[in-house]
Structures are given as C-alpha cells and as structure tokens.
Image (tube, rainbow, N blue to C red; front, side, top):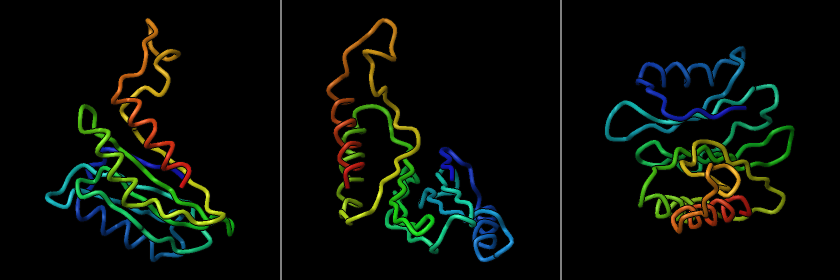
Length: 151
C-alpha cells in the first residue's frame, strides 16, 4: 500500500484507474482525490488487491485534493487510511481540524493509518539544526494528527 501526493492526474488517468479497479487482473485498487475545480494536483492511495478483502469505502475527499480517507479491510482487519497533503502556513491547523470533523467516527477494532506530506517537522528539537521548539501552529497540527490517529 502506498499514498502519493501532488499527482497531476488527468481525467484519462482517473478513467484508467477506475477501469483497473474493475479488472480482477490489475494488481492494485486505486482511490483518489483531485481538485474539484480543475484538473491537476491531487492524491491517491494504491492497495494491492491480494490483501484488500473488501472493496473499500471512500469516506472523505478534500475539495482541493489535499486529503483522502478510506475505510478498508486488509486480511479481514478494518482500517481507516488517511492520505494527507497538508497546506503549509497559517491555514494548516484549520485544515487538520476540518479533517478531524469530517472523518473521526470511532469504530471499535478499526486501526488508523496516516500517511502523506504533513508539511511540518514533528520533533524540531531532534530534527532541526540548530534545535528549535515547535511553533504554536505545529503544536496544533501535531495535536490534530494525534486525535486522528486515536479515532
């Protein structure tokens, strides 16, 4: 399974993915979200059909193609997979909060996988030279991701 951010998919690429999803010989099932206002950047989730034990259900797509959430079953274990390409800058905490409001319906036994480009440094005291404390914006985004992971 892998997620991809900043794809420049076209309607013909999306049609090919839809066709492959219906083809039992195609190796991957593809879920995607693209900008609803124009063709261009978006994200996708590719899952090997051999481990996908249910068709999967898209539960959220961001209108600008910045997030995708899918309920799937892998080897009969339920998962919520969230692919994120978060904006950077001051709108980031609001982006994560809207994502939480859209998809956090806890389900017993469901595991959560978060992947993508979160556009912040999770632990700047370790990952930034010279070491720096997290900004208020990064702290809000980290808290939102933790809330998503717990859903």
